[in-house]
Amino acid sequence: RGAARQLDAAEEADARALAALLRAVEELRELVAAEPRRAGELLAPAALLATLAELEVALGSPPRAGAVLVADPLAIRARRFDTVIVCGLQEGEFPRPAHPEPFLPDELRRELNIAAGLGLPPREDALADERYLFYATVSRPRRRLLLSTRDADEDGNPALPSFFVDDVRAVLPGLPETHRPLSEVTWPLAQAPTAAERARAEALAGPRLQPRPIASLSAAATARLRQREVLSAGALEKYARCPVRWFVESELQPARFEPDPEAMTRGSCIHAVLERSLASLDWPLPLDRFAEVETVVREAVAVESPKWVLGRGRAAQAAAAHEIAADVLRLLRHEAEAGGAFKPAELELQFGMGEAGLPALELHSLEQPGAEPLRLRGVIDRVDLDLAGRALVRDYKSGRPGRGWPVAQWRAEDQLQVALYMVVVRELLRRTPVGGVYQPLRGENLRARGIVREDVNAGVAVVKTDRRSQPDLEQELAAASERACQLSVQLRAGRLVPAPDRCSRDGCAYPGICRVVDA
Image (cartoon, rainbow, N blue to C red; front, side):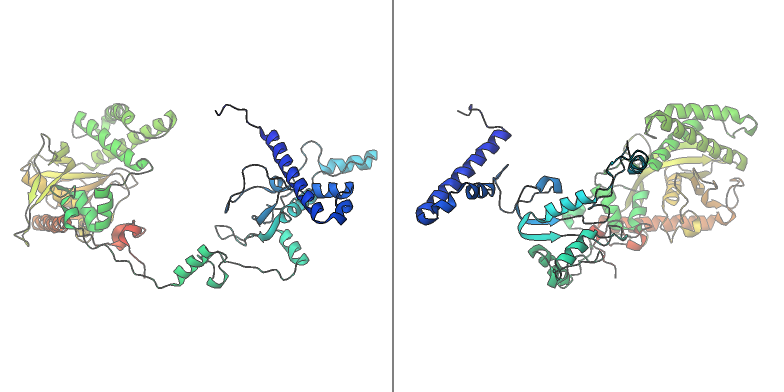
């Protein structure tokens, strides 16, 4: 069973032709039997051959209801269809432009004809062939023919229709035409060509429903928040800017199709190189022997750069490693020239991370005494100390400067990270914080911005407007602590109020989730 030889394509075509011939002969026999007087007329050789020549033989898979064949004009020249839709009737597409003859172009053919009296025909004029293909295409349908052309491409640039369309209009004037502009989402309701398009047009013309924006999570969802027990300063800042964006990126954490941005990867590598370099250097850095510093930095880059994907190919990775070394050396030279009484003491200081480091920082709200305390965790990039043991917190930033870096903008921009790190230094390290700054790693201006007490020697690189008195500094730390506690209460309660004006530079980053509708 199932072992019999099957017909190949040519044999199947012959079999189908034979079946059509036998059916035609049977129908002819019935017709002769019904009308014996026409037997001579019907069975005449010329009439019989003409009848057989009009027989149609179906090849390939049997036709199915609703099936559509997508083909080019050459593939349907000898076939018949119920409906044919001719697409791409554009200038330069159908008819296609002529292609020059690579070996003997028409210009040389004309010169040979003149010089030698030859009659070489031109080869580059393909219009006659294109006209034949167009005629073969439009003559294939039995019931309906649709010609499709566009007046603009997807970018809105003008597109010229094929002159074949004008030829059809000239031969068959008064043909019905429908047109939909590129700016219209659906066809006009009265011109909808199909039932599906009519349904879309009716939906567009129907009443608009205002989607309900997200307000808060359910109790069950709130109880499953990953960052409910211990929070980070970065998460609080992100939540303050847009709770929905925080929820999507920090809690839902959808898988990314693309790798991490190269700028983020380079920033992480610079952090690692700085940590390794500063652990091996003596302070203050010797400007007169800066070649020793360069040697240490390049050794650190050689160790750390292979751990990060900094580009495709060895050349790109080597160029990225060289750029990282140049950025680190530029920053260290900037700090050496700025001077000051502080030197690095703690690098990548962890707290609340569940390891052998410092415990989590616990903060209590003064305005909401009964609220659950905030437990904070994180990693402080660098803590510098002076001879008196006073601390200066530095937070590295590899991106472009933000509006909230200066202390004057901390409250308006909900910039909490450095201020909370200063509280960590005071409460967990038992050091007196006298400053906290955001330190850019790249760019033309490497001056750190933040807050520094006015009576300490932090070098000439500190911006004058960032100097504050001790009471002002304490006030900023208290305000940041209270704001962090308030945000933690809202976060743990599952409040997700969209903030599209602060979500990103381009507005709402997740409009499908926020359901924010522009007015």
